[in-house]
Length: 507
Length: 130
Image (cartoon, rainbow over the protein chains, first blue to last red):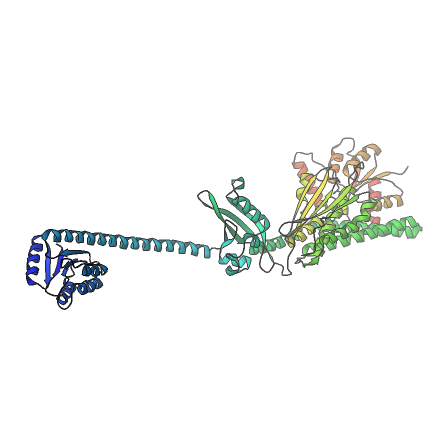
């Protein structure tokens, strides 16, 4: 039953109205003046209040203000004297919901009450809806926050370096592992740097192509690459990336990076121990080589002896040449063996790769000319001064160029116009490429397979079988790579890729 | 007429050494630089003795020795092996080839390991050729 407070200073009206309202089913509380009315309101908390406007002491307007202050939702109906417009407007200003003129007719009262009831109910409902909505929003917000915190934690604690960008390749996510790899702080990168500032050029190009929907590629598979970190050092990493989509629309990229420094170090250690094992295992092969040299020395001294005995200068000369040749073979073998079994960190210094290539060409020029082999230099003039180990590169190129000239020299097809080429090129991501090619005798697949293994030589007694092993080791120490392609009778091409540093820190 | 001795070795220094020993001791030296051309020279020149190396490009000494010993016409050509490879290793290769379906072949009468003294080589040649 609805509770209703009726305030009027005239006891008769109070009595008649209260009877009539009770008859309509209301639970009526009465008060004979404003002060009593406010006290009753506080005690009974009715939803609806009907108050006379003109009362001694606290009048109807004052009662209205107090009640609205106590509970703004309360519907207050004001009973005014006939034509008392001024007071009615004043009451309206303070939030009265309706007016009834005196004398109060039952019909008017009933309409006013049902309207007030309706308004009150609508307001209550609205309030419930609002509260409910607010509660639901708060709940949803908590859930979203919980999930997003979970994802942030996931990204933050990942062992992979994670770098996400927006559609314009601007960096928006950069986790602590990424910081360890790249060296830049999040403040330097997030919203400040673009993928170009951080990633290798090829990766940026691939991401850009994928964002543009080229070939419908959405994922870039795991691939090894070298990144350049804040202090300029090169760091080997493994990386994969994904295009982030909203529906079908690309909105950004995320790239994952794994630091391979530790793995590379272990690989290097393993390679080292394998190399030492290879040297050990092939002591037998080595002994064979030394026996042959000794035999040559003995033979030489025998010829010299005969030359002296018989005073034959020709025998003397032949014997002496034989001794010198075998001294040379000893020295080659020992030098190769030494440089092969010893580990050496590259010593980076500023140098001109084209100048190294030119020096090597000059060194082999005499041998090439004597054997009618044409040397073809093709140097990329855009290569300037870079940081790499010039001694390593010199040795690598000299080994390969000597081999290339030998490949022409040993070719029995003398109808060929023999030529050996040395080409230099500048690749993206700080790599210098050297290509050493010849049109000499070439090699079949079986020989190519054995090329970099120990003591294998196609040059018979002329080679130590260590040259290419040493070459490969020098290239690996420099984090580079070597590839070979060859066709019997057509020639051979070696491609060497040497990464260079931008600063002296090394890696 | 002096006896013909063929030296088969890919190393010119070894050939020069053996050839000089032969000349000094009154033999007629012939030379071949691998197993293939060695076999041709043996067939063409019918030498009294072959001084054979083991590790050579194109047909190795292991193969040439086997061909000579299994050939009716050539099985009596006298052979001295002169190699940096140990006799044990040479015979292991021969055994492997026999097991692989080849004929049983005799061990070489004379097997010299490099380096060899000139006098030693001369003595052995003298002994073999009688």
